[in-house]
Structure formats: C-alpha cells, structure tokens
Image 1 (cartoon, rainbow, N blue to C red):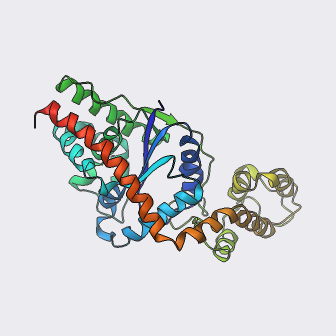
Image 2 (image 1 turned 180 degrees about the vertical axis):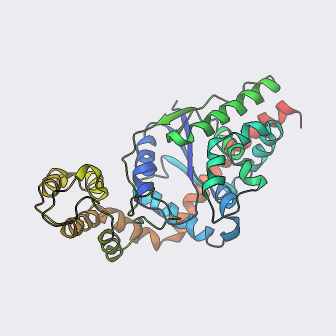
Image 3 (image 1 turned 90 degrees about the horizontal axis):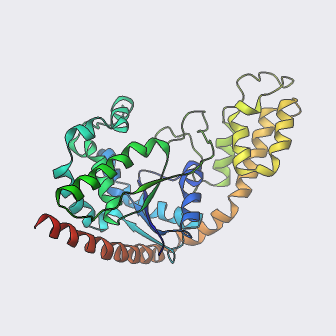
Length: 326
C-alpha cells in the first residue's frame, strides 16, 4: 500500500509563482507516489486573518482552481476544505489538553511571527496553538510523511512529540511518527528582491493576465551594480536572471551572455522575460479559463474530497475516543 501524506495551503489571497514552484509542482509529483490528502487550511487562515476574513470563501475556490490547473488530479488525491471535516477541531481539542505550554512558546516560527508581523494582532490563544492544530491535521490522517520546507521542521517535530505523548499516555500506538519530505525548491524571490509574499504585493499571481504580467515584470528590480547600458552585469545576483532559470530555462545561457557582456539592456531583458513567462503559463491559463466558469465541478470535487477525508477522520477519532475513554 502507498504511504500517506497530508499538506495544505491557507486561503489568504491569490496564489502566485512561489506557490507553483515551492509546493504545487511537488504535490503533482507526490500524488503518483503517495496516498494524498490536500486541504484548504481555512481554520489556519482564520488564526492570522480573523480581522479580514470576508474574502476567504472566494479565495478557497480560486486556490482550488489553481491547484487543479497545476496538475492535481481529484482521481488521485483527496482535495477538501479543512473546516468541512469537523474532526480536525475534535482532535485539536484532545491535543490541546495534553500539549505543554512551553512546547508552544519556544516554537521559533511563533516567536518570529510575533516579532515581524505588524499589520495583524497575533497575540491570541488561537495563534499560540497553531502548531497543535497542525499536528491534528497531520495525525488525523495518520500521515507517514509531510512535504515541508526547512522552516517548518520545528512544527513537524512538535507533531511527533504530541503523537508520542498521546501514544505514551494512553498506552496505544494510534499515531505514526510522520517524517519530513524535504524537497529542493528553486530560489524565487519577490519582484522587489524580498521574500515573495501576498502581504508584500510583490508577486506574479497565477491568475494574472498577460497585461498584468508585462507590467509587473517591467518593474522588477535588476542587477544593482549595472547602472549604464555598457556596464557588464552580474546575472548570478540578478533576480530577473533567476526567473529565466526557473521559467524559461531554454534561454538561460543566452541571457547569461547578454547580461555578463553588456549585449542587452535590463529593460529589453525584462521584456523578453515577460514574453517567455506568459508563454510558459499559457497551458495553465487555458485550463484556468475553462475551470473558472464551472463552479459546480469545483463543488463536486470538494464534496468528494470531504467525504473521503471525513470517513478516514471518523475512524481515527473512534480510536482516539476509545483510547481516552469518552
């Protein structure tokens, strides 16, 4: 039997190129190797965006459309919305009772978010417990592995600690020890050279039109050391070049030569990148155009995913309740 994985994304905005190369491309490959559960993590989104959650339903639909356009196959993977499977909160409640506060307070991601996020109030009970709900998400489906980036490793270790604590307390081997699936992700910064983020508004969205892509790419930061047209560039540190390497690899060597030997200016280089990127995304946009007009299909996919996820989750909670005596 295939091993099982669980992964998800928060519906806090439109998905962008970073989501495509950082997660979706990997998910598409994994669905041929694993039994996959992919969830729209709306409870997690609420933990950080509770003050501006009015667009969440729209983002849920838009995000799932992008997942399908990227290649997720509902015949191979269970695609569902987290809040529609009530057992996530049930197991979260159980885990909340046995997770020491110290485990949560020392979580590096929690401390980093409190320091760096200034536009939202994250000093809440719910946000402190974010990793507990994440553990419930993973363990509800008895996931053997979880695709994560290195920054998420402390969260996954906490999930393992919670699983061991539960199994030890109740003398039951209900939950597995999920392992990290670390994958190499292409280095892709935002258009301004910072981390690509919805909150920074520095990304090319997967749903952007050709006109929007042209405009965004034309404003990209380039090699800061290349001031004049005759100055030789430094493609190794140029963000525009990194986009060529990821999305238009057939031009990578030519672009390196143009830049390094000052054969082409940055404006022309960005224009070529925009054209290459638009062409690379054409199949994606064609699929998106067809799916965007078929909301019933999205509903059916999510309902089928919810049913499959609920059936598995229900069996897990029966074991949990029997173990703890309620």
